[in-house]
Image: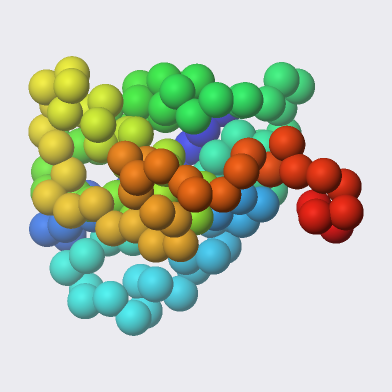
Length: 137
């Protein structure tokens, strides 16, 4: 199950949905509301398997996670908003924005990502599962 941390108040003029990095949680974004301007609502998204949201069968592909995130997020995407994702969450937020555009919903005003290269740029590194143990360790 996916949920938005804290109830979204929706009186601010702009919402930023924040997706935690692999192993991270919504608490990562706890203090952002104190730092950002008051007209920006910080909406941390709690992913399955984080904090108190355990799951029997974890997602193994970003597309599965995005399909589960969309119905939860769509009701909140009728006003100006942005996505932020760091590392693994950069890929999640990118794919969410792509699916929202594809399905003709109101697109995010901004997509902020950090800690990850573009999914359109191939990696020059060999896949980690193909590394020799001596190199991996």
